[in-house]
Structure formats: C-alpha cells, structure tokens
Image (tube, rainbow, N blue to C red; front, side, top):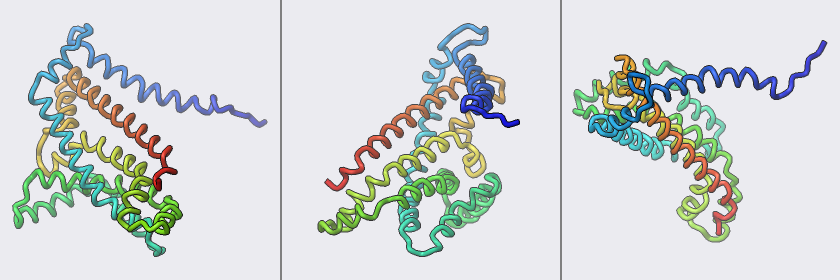
Length: 265
C-alpha cells in the first residue's frame, strides 16, 4: 500500500526541529535578556552593557577584528578565485580543492599547527600578537571567501566582456565596469560569511593571542559564571547586528541582480 505525502506533511519534521532548537532557545535567551534576577521585565541589562566602557570596547574591538579579517580575505580571495574561475586548465577544480581541503581538518588542529608556525616566526621576526590574531583569522576564513567568489566568477557570461572589448574598452575598464559589478553577489556572500562569524570566533584569539576581548569569549565568560542575563543581552545584540547586516546584504544583492543588464551602459 502506497502512501502519498503532501509538502506540508514532509515539512513537519523541519518545523518541529525549528521549534525545538531555534524558536524555544531564542525565547529563553530573550526572557533572560529582558528580565532581572527577580524575573521582572527590565532593560537594565542593556543599559549596563552600553554604559560600560569594557563591554562597548569589546564590541568595537570585535568589529575591528572582523572588518580587517574580511578586507584581507577579500583582497586575497578575489584574484585567487578569478584565476581559478577563468583558467583553461582542467586542474582548476583541483586547485580549488586545495584551498577548501583545510576546512576538512579539525579546526583546533589547524590553529594549533598555525600557532607553532607563528611561534617560530615570532622568535625571528618579533611579530605582534595582534598580527598573529589577524593571520589566524584570515587563515581560518579564507576558504569561505574564495568559494562564493569562485562560484560567482565562474558563472559570468563572457559575452559581456567580449562586447565591452569589441567596443574599445580597456582591460581595466572591463574589470571595473563589467566583471566587478557582475561579481558583487559573490562578494556580498563572501563578506557575509566571513564578517559575521569572525566577530564571535574567540578560539583563534585564545589560542594565538591568549585574549578574551572579543564578543564570543565575553558571552562564554558570562554563561560559565552563570550570569545568563548579561550573556543573553550580548547574544541579542549580536543577533540584531547579524540581522541588520543580512538584510542590507540581501537588498544589495537583489539590487545588483536587477541591474545586471545595465552594466555596459
């Protein structure tokens, strides 16, 4: 006897998963963030966060780390992805796999190996701990920037570039007015995939810098000391920041996709 399941029925396990592991935990975090120790609704936790120079400084420091990491990843990943996407060699996919392969190795093992390398270099070159942190962040998140850029550049229609060249456009003009605008969706996707997690990734800092001045480690310190109210406040603030960045990136991507035809005008 055959049973036909509708789409709504097939979506039930997914809906149950969302309720149990997304909505309910988020509700718990919200309840702790907007209540005090007596269980009464209060905004005192948010006032305390923005009124403390330590917590605000930690937020700004996290943003600085994330922005620097994202910019360096973009500068390194874009030419790399472009070469891999436009190469005529059959080994293009194999070369891409070499960049993605480190993601298959345990994160702690990779950072531990990098720490040993930086320790040796630090003894010879006197590297600053902050520089070590940036190197570790870029090493960790670079594949997340290369993949979306590679996908976007590999799907570009060469007819746009050929048309611009036939009209007398220089290589620089073709790149700035044709290739770069058409690859914006990949740039936005890569920036989002690197910027957001690098704001909270404290493992790299703890292992190569031995620092706790980042939002992720601050959240962990609050929850480990059973201060769920302040930990939930920081989680909500980060969630709002991530939501804003996601909405802006989605609208920017939609705007670019609607204007693809006009890049040659």
